[in-house]
Amino acid sequence: MSFTIPRGTQDILPGESEKWQIVEQTAHDLCRRYNYKEIRTPIFEQTELFARGVGDTTDIVQKEMYEFKDRGDRSLTLRPEGTAPVVRSYVGEKMHGWVNQPVKLYYTGPMFRYERPQSGRMRQFVQFGVEALGSADPAVDAEVIALAMELYQELGLKDLKLVINSLGDKESREAHKQALIQHFEPRINEFCADCQARLTKNPLRILDCKVDRDHELMGSAPAILDYLNEDSTKYFKQVQEFLSAMKIPFVVDPTLVRGLDYYNNTAFEIMLDGEGFGAITTLAGGGRYNGLVEDIGGPETPGIGFALSIERLLMALEVQGVDLIQDSQLDVYLVTLGDKAKNKAPELLYQLRKQGFSVDADYMGKKMKAQMKTANRQQAHAVLILGDDELAEGKINVKEMATGEQKLLQLGELEAELAALLQRKDEA
Image (cartoon, rainbow, N blue to C red):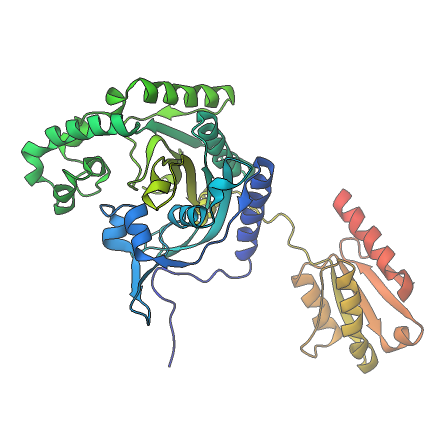
């Protein structure tokens, strides 16, 4: 019997996994500089968490969740996004009582959505995201956006486009909601069943419909910016002023609506504004979600965050020809000749690895010539050649592959020689 990988998933093999490690390490380092701390939440949660947190009118909840019953007949769901679990933890662990506020968190991990697999959109995908909970300062909005932009820039992406909008506070959204209902209601029968169901509950989601996006009423729909009250207008203006002060270019798009119900006030997306990336150009999205903590059973707490797909990030890097792996060389490859030398190899390899060198050797019983070919394929910077005769004298040969220079050293001199050799490589 043969097995195939489940549809919409992927194996990340050596050669690719190193790129993931670089992206993840860059994200870790960046969050350290911004003083965001890592949080790790379970891969599955109570289904009701996402129905309440993400919104029961969203495509995620209605169509895309991997929901199952456990042996206790409890409904559980593989997490489709990261914000609701983080907020659930924030409430459960009473982080609102921590001394240092706002609570600034980040996460990296797999998410699951049952949708049609396509380029850059998998059923299991990995998200990196940040959440800042406890402050309603527009400076935090600007900080979160800046962190997202800086991650892409540090990894070498160019042609980025930041699009922002305001979805307004509760009062502004209610006024906009009524305007949208009046706009769509006379012709709602021309829209899909999902839009018809959302008309009175959350008509803003109609604007995000992929089925009816070309309907003429979409282009003439009331814009949220025309319904912002004084507080929301002032807030959005301050966010823009902070971004301008940081010299982060942005475009205000009054049609931008995020796909989750919990967003209000600031909303943003980062897109790749170039050729060759396909129809879906959005790399990251996020916004403010004041009210979500209360929906999940916590105290009134403002929050803002974003999430990005690492798969789409890597796709964008590939499109722009950015190679994250600059040096994949092995430091040292050990070639042995004779049984005694071969038996010495495990001890010598262990010692060199403890000293910090990346080292490998032959485990297939190859002749010396074949071992040297393997060292070349592994791009080893240096080759150690140890024969029975050299071992008897406590010596070893060190060959620098770039120059062909070879030295016969005492085994006790090996560490210092390798350190000097690799230092010359780094300085070259």
